[in-house]
Length: 599
Image (cartoon, rainbow, N blue to C red):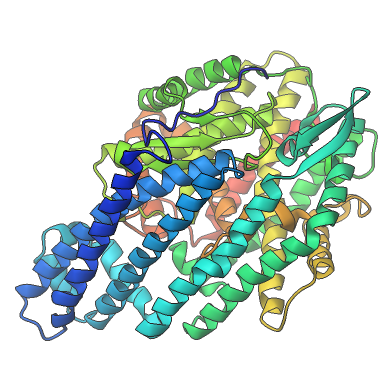
């Protein structure tokens, strides 16, 4: 694991103190001024009774200005976010990011005003869009934005909420990231005391040696216990703010906005959740089979990610690169070329280290039409899949870039944001399984596949139950750290059932998962399950149709910001409102579990 790559951010910006960054700040401020001036001088005079010729011109200008502002703002935001994610102790970058947040808050306020204005002309908006130029190319997002305008507070209240967010929910979110990323943990490894960052401790769950995994779990429990009160305050702050705003905006409940953001309906979510719940006994069969291989009746938390089969395989970074490029090439030359570019141009930061954010992500660089990827690599098959996963996000971005999509056309719902990433995992895992020679090799590959699937179905179900109860109870008052631990353990008990040892669950999972603390991203859990099962179904279509599937798939990825999830799925004959589709995807996972149990 020596010499793991750090990403190269210099093509985005040469440095925090550079004239280029200062220039980008000035350009963004100027564009926001132009947006605000257009709203005051033009849009305020245009209403539902305006002459038909004037509305299209006003719409076109507004769309153009917002696209330009988000292109500049999104690029600067990406740069500073990536600098801070790589080292949360970088005070200069954090300060610049705080300054940028003030500008972005103004841009979001302008978008909120635009949303309210679109809602006010909803009756004539379709006709105006038909006669427009740029606006006609953005008809979906404009109509969706107008409809969501029904859930706005008054303009003064919305403006105040945006400003207060900087020192409210967003500040709590940043505090959680700071605390969790800067923890260093002492642990006994191989007869020596070592100090590891928390991502390094979490990576030990993939170690083939149970004593090491158990030590990692015990070290985690000790550290989270020390910080649980601070992190409980963070979660109360984020969720309390969300609940208050949902109520003032007329949302029916805490799920109303997330379902709308996901571009699905409640019936689709209920169907998906029902399928997940009914599949739990299937996954428990896998857990019990894994426990039996370890000579146990039940798994402890530290066993969930343990490798099985040919556990001696450790992937170097170069081996990971070669494997991914080879397998991606069997699917699409464009996918391989994108991955090769990512490796060669140093888009990836792979080394776990103190101060670096945990987990992994892929984010865009809009102005360069590139992406950047953060992972904490340890050579396990699971982390090889994670690299493939994040490269899938980069490919998704690239499809939109190559299709010439604007910033507003790329606003993808969370349900579809995981489509390419999980597809890429499937491609790599299928290739590994096909070339496995011995039963032990096949077992190890199936284990990696099922660890991912079980996390995305079983653990995500527990996270949904956890967040649902937290949101419901937070509306009545603050929750203590012990309350949160109790809710988490009960959610895990409901999801994992008798397959997980009740003595060794993970009551502190709420402390470090960033999804719970994302402002405006409540219930960022069910979209992962949607993406897993949707991609599994799409992969089955690919296996049936072969190479002819790929161009349509790339078009789908380029278009995920321009239609509902149901309409995009229908292009492939998929009905996401039908239980049969979701059950079909679960059946594909069932076959892998059957193979696993038979080995």
